[in-house]
Amino acid sequence: MSVTLTIPVMLFFSLTLLYFIRSNWQVDRNQGLIVLTLYHTFLILVVVIGID
Image 1 (spheres, one colour):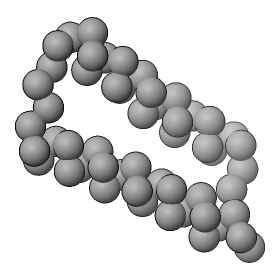
Image 2 (cartoon, rainbow, N blue to C red):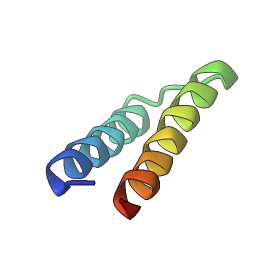
Image 3 (tube, rainbow, N blue to C red):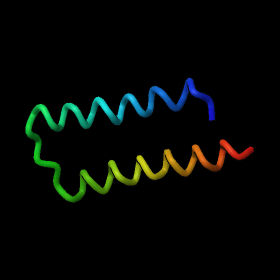
């Protein structure tokens, strides 16, 4: 997978996490599962597409 796709996605997750920390946002179970699913999907795509 290209760095031009990987870096923006990782920046998005990092900035979102920073926003949650600074705003003292309480992430509920559903929001956490959505973010975790998106992150795992991204990691799977990196591995699957990166092997080709």
